[in-house]
Length: 400
Ligand SMILES: Cc1ncc(COP(=O)(O)O)c(C=O)c1O
Image (cartoon, rainbow, N blue to C red; front, side):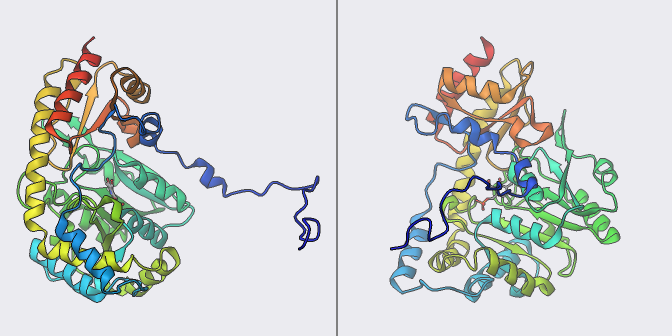
């Protein structure tokens, strides 16, 4: 056996510290995790901090994954996903949005998050910037930084009629280094939904200026009016500079399965296939098979889920809106209440104290970019009993 010295592994006194990319040091850790890590392992905490429902994946999807394993679907697949899943997704999208959809435009990814990562790798490099509507899920901001570019957040504002975006401010923040808009609608954390007229204007702007649009539509089915939110699918032509990101996580309660997809112009298929190869190569094969069943047979489940979340939303809104120091809009979509607490200067400190004193876990607004401070986010995809008990404790804490 070789000794350490022979293997060249003995400690040296003249060693030079090996560095990591300086940019990566600037990446912020998620403040949601920072709060949650203090109570995740405690059974007595009513945890409403993560963006995840309390409903497990339905049995018909679980059974499809088990069947696929039994049938031996355990080998690598095409980078962009198995053809039957891409066909099923094309059928799902064209059925839902009433548009033709070519399977060449669809790539299956290892989550919505990894679709965003691939989109950033495709579009940006150091010196570029991405204009993002916020507040927004922190991952959307930090992925831009990891890719080496600069995120520029343009705030949506809470007014008398709910959340809204001033398009002039969005367009004014574009310069010659802007490579893309990142628009998350329906939005996490506010539940804001970009109206179709605004989507049309954004698309025209992108076409005119040669700027990409990354549309994060992972909450497109969790809407409290209609079957889906307004989507860039219904407006964009197949060759427009648009990338639409979606996920199995929210609509079919599959957060832990890690599968999503992206829709791009067909001409990018091969390039995206290469990026997928060098990121995760392909999504787990048996999970792709379960995905077919989810999109083809999942409509009754999606409808039931939305009704359940609607009940949670109504309970939370009624209770929170009745607290003097709280301001919030009725969420139009997604499963979050994002509320302002007057006089709260540091939402992270507030969330930690709420956790320690009342055993309720919320996400601090500061986690969602520069405009999030002063707010807290509560995920209402929980049982009515958990919501009622949490709201009682939150009210006591705020009102005391
Ligand atoms: C706005 C937004 N986009 C994308 C995702 C990604 O979801 P996943 O990676 O589970 O598919 C999430 C998850 O919380 C989200 O809130």
